[in-house]
Length: 222
Image (cartoon, rainbow, N blue to C red; front, side, top):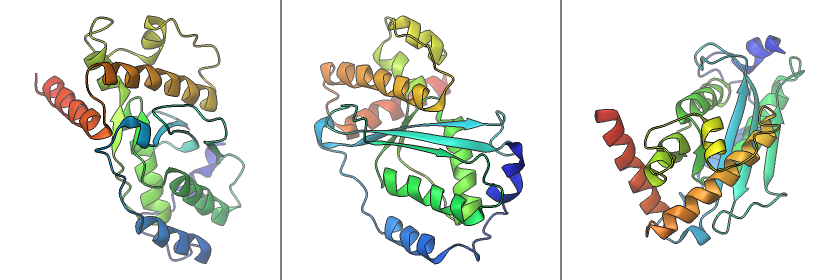
């Protein structure tokens, strides 16, 4: 499984051998407009994203899989709005890896992402997209590790682990180590976060990002 290193990360900016269909799809993706975030959550499609990796260091460890779940219509979970990419066993399918990564970009479009510990998740994604497709992947992203203690201060005023948040909401963590199951749990947690945000008049994606920016700035500066 860990043998994917040499083909998944082939060297920053080396994209000369990118398949033509991937190149054209990438150009189309880059031309997509940014989403409108000053409308109610009901009109915004969020995408919850998680990854599995060979270790905890984005700069040296390997990306093994990506799982994503779209949440349109104010966080409603749609079983058919899901994507799972498994890079294991693809050592001799270099072009297929490019197409897998492009499939992720097409699935996400330009939707805001939702993660837990974004530095970890985005670290691996940024490296993969830079070294495979030659792009700087800088999506708008909400990190629930920071937002949850801001909106649910009565449960925990400080960032805690995902397992602790699941326990706070009496949500089962059974199957959490499986990639897609973990993403589904994150999506359910985000549903609760959205409901709390609306109750606090944080009723648009733009306001949620403002709250996120303010909370992370305050926590990191104190």
